[in-house]
Length: 438
Image 1: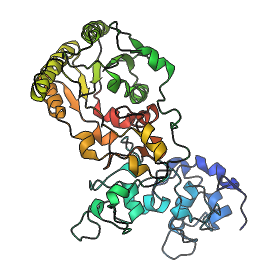
Image 2: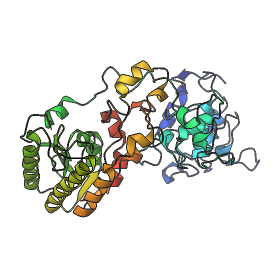
Image 3: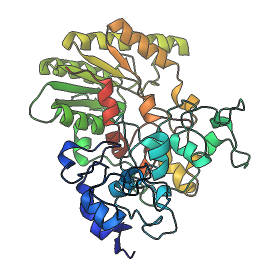
Image 4: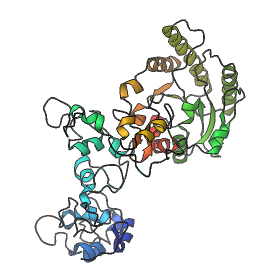
């Protein structure tokens, strides 16, 4: 069979992109197009699989036509149809790689692996819509991502695939002297990295205009969407980094957002050497009170030095007290207050990756140093004392160990403490799950 290919797909099959086939289920609206209910449209059976569109099992071998795999590429016919591939060619685009090994959605998982092993959708980068991309999932909690499990041939549902007493993260499957966990991101920086290393800080100019700089004590209030329940994002630049995700949540839930953020000014009422922060915080809370928000989402960098603290323990004590004070003030303004836990401390990817273009893993950050910080306990305690919700964001921002600098083709952070806008936006479903409906 000769096929005219465009971008690796048969041209005649392009129209089938509009046909949605659920795994093992044919939508009621597709019954007319699939009279024998085998998961294949009549057009596909006639033109491509060469099966009888009126008989569910054309060759009467006990396997429905939709589940047949005539080209033995690991993809049943119904998935060849869904992926717009040729069911009679194991390598539809002729690139030397079998269709089952292709990665249709770019999540570093082969098509067949997603269908048969992880039970994810090879056309969706986030099949369960939890904000974590399929390749970055760690379903067996062994700290090895599903993409790492696929790479090294281990099972993503079992922490110790071979049952030898060593979990998959600590194995050295390719015998190169490096643990699989540490080597799971050993690959080149992708050519389509988003944002690019030439412009990693990808914030729009409008965001910069809404964010108060150091030395300024007067708050700037910016609004997104004209109607809906009022939700305020309040904090420093570590709060601002969630704006991309929060805007997508607002679009989904119909919220009206207000942004009240300032560089280097924590939510916690602590003493700093800079004099402008205390006045900004005071005025910001007054402005937020006047908005009458249905919910306040707040976050901050949690490693500020407390001016005048006589020891680290004294600084932590003042931090907890200062954060509790602010959270109680916010709780008096809104019955829904959520403190988002701080993001990891990453290796500076913008500086590191240009020096390691052939090995992303060289710029990964071990989860322990990146996420286990003393003030996390203080943050949780302050939230509890103030009667507000605390939500850890580490499962979203560091889904496996080491914390990756790049997930699929997305640059995670543009420096040691701030997510890129592109990555933040992908986390919106995960963020949405952390926030109540006001």
